[in-house]
Length: 418
Image (cartoon, rainbow, N blue to C red):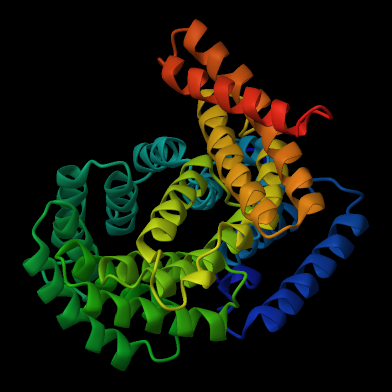
């Protein structure tokens, strides 16, 4: 080993903080930890191998992951830190790899998460927590049967009697396997246990409500799903804030449930809240952004002619489309075929917004939106043509559509256009 320094779970004080005091308080607490870390690092002249520095780095990194400060966590759990932990061996390597896996999961990088957890399993004796974590990531990768096996193995390793957390895991796997009734029954039996035994963990309770809502929605019971999504959103808003990805996930689920209930106007309101958070978040990924834009267009069509339909306006999303594009660009998530498909959808939505502004007599706003749309369409066309030529995907049909749309936008922006 590289150092004789010992470490125990109780040494990780910062990451043990619950972070459920609300957005402002959570941010203040995290800033305090960051300032303390900065002083420690300065005293050690930035030497990662100085006593206490690696522990503090892992501690702050895990606290950032817990608080969804994912960019900060990514910087802290750097390759140099991972290499040092691997060199030191247990328990340093297991702690680091586990936290890094959690970070990758929250960054929507599940294949990397699975690889890290499989490394944890290979480096450590069999442990229920390892099986539970593997089951969670396999579930997200669509390997639902394998996930269920991992969850069942974890229960066996703990003596064969499922605890409330095990019931939660089993329910999610069964929901994804299409066993909706069993999943609902299992989670409905687990929720009272969480309410009784984890009353001091409101964020966990919110997550259970969210999971139960997903089970109801998968079973076609949209009204029940809406109630649980709404409760999850309320708890997240109170304890982690409305800028948290957890709140975003709950209101996005609420939007889907309301849409399934045939309530497109309320569904669009919830979708707009989710889109705003997702667009500027550390965990941004092209696929959820694309899916929200597609659903937004569908909700516009579904709301047409209904009382209150004026609230279902794609222009509400336009500022956040700009935020999303800048956020994706910073992370180089807009530089391949998938990015091109998303940029094309963004351009389409902004063209619609431009037409709406034009119909309202807002020529300057329409010009600005159409100019932004044209920029997106041109860039999307470049990316999709490159992906098609490289054989990564056949996006030729989308390329043709984007080319036509770009040409029409250019014509509308031309000084000769009447």
